[in-house]
Image 1 (cartoon, rainbow, N blue to C red):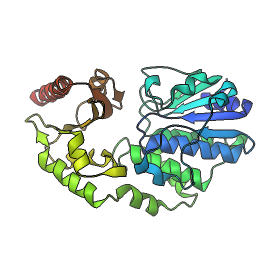
Image 2: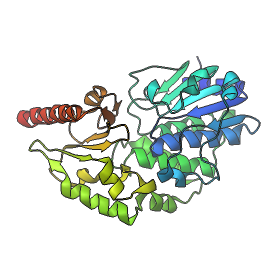
Image 3: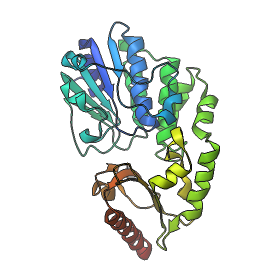
Image 4: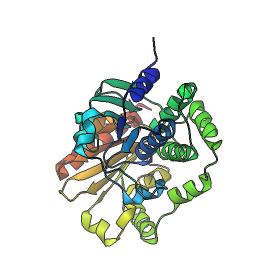
Length: 323
């Protein structure tokens, strides 16, 4: 029986048009796996039309070395297309819901498969990154014509670095093996790290504000609520606020933390992290989900914020009392 990787490649070979999607509000792994797969397929099948769609994020535009980042795909292109979704656990989170108009669909992801969707599903829950899976896809089927390029290797490396928190989380021997293989394609990894680590002066000042105003509860749960007005005051422009997510982890008594960021609609995006308790089940209660120790969620009201804080705080207190 053919492996799921072989079945996916068989479908890719059948179609002249392939459109690759990823999740909304993308992180480096979403872009890395999406654009890395696109680069592999373009090199392997130069006569096919390969597209990557979704909203661009200025703060991550440096990832693309081309003049264009995301492709402008007409609706009619979906009529006879194979659509591949990468790094997206839940269908509502897919950026650009036209994916449903594809003739056939494939899901490639490393999050818990709580919502199976797509005609084919290749899910490796707990894998360090979807970008790692894309490399393994190439590696297992290169004898059937798949080709890796320096461009694709660079993008996949960025995705792995992003989702492992600069090799601090979700690490295993396989991840390091894949990274070692990617290095063999000769991309400038020092430039990658420079782009990932460098922030603007305003972003540095904002980081100081976050650390000074972080609320830390006795349980070890830390949180901060960032209003729209505050973010606008620091004039972060293209930087966004994702760079502050790891800051609470630098404080020794912090065991879990949340960043609440007010949106234009008045609700709050929640970035939830932990190094002790599993928090994705809590995130699931707030229109979110993700990894056991790193999840996203939404708080529609201030009462939602208070309820989420209480849930995480209680979970930490339970663990603390049992030790």
